[in-house]
Length: 75
Image (cartoon, rainbow, N blue to C red):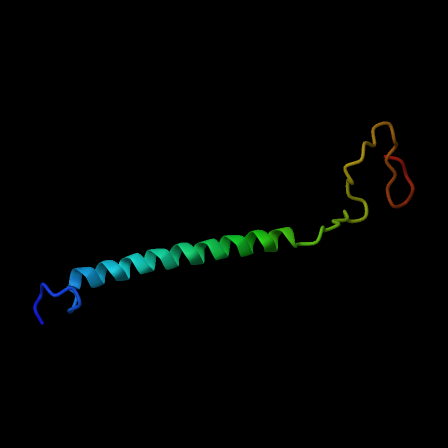
């Protein structure tokens, strides 16, 4: 086969270019799949009810309410 024959063997540059372009395309595809799965997993998380431990500030407005400790003594 001659090197000018289009159906002949390809040069190392063409093979390298094909391999690099394939790697880029696969990288984009896998990145897109990962981003979609991450967004779906984040939206599928159930709402968490976080309860403050006993005696902790619940965030409610308690101005004007006297504080009482465990013994019932105002302080």
